[in-house]
Image (cartoon, rainbow, N blue to C red; front, side):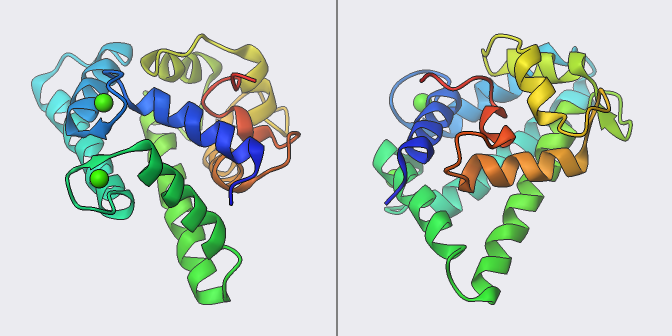
Length: 187
Ligand SMILES: [Ca+2]
Ligand SMILES: [Ca+2]
């Protein structure tokens, strides 16, 4: 069972990923996502656009592989919740399975960091984070950025993102900074 906060996060994130708001997550949502990211990041070069699209579609293929239980190439809200529950359950398992889940979240965090990091520096600025949120259709949030920047350096490092992604998926603590990774939650 997911806790209330985890359910809220799962539902918030599903609504963001479901770009065309048809109640299902499928490849089309990720095609739109790639276009939005290209716009937000001002990627106009054809090759760079194709590379961005490939990355976003690889993310969809990964999601489809882990969450599309009945193999119909779309993820329903029920399948999404089951996927979150499986993540929660796996971190309570023996080291080996827990380790695999943590590794996959760390990979997701590195991907998220790269998606935010438009200038290929060692950190993500507040402006980059705001542009990334905008690509999700989420209003810019200085408060969220400040919480994610937990050591107050004024930028987000890959390590900040790793902690945030783990907390976003796994924490049921209302105080966990990672809860606001995708903007303030609709409480
Ligand atoms: Ca959809
Ligand atoms: Ca399905």
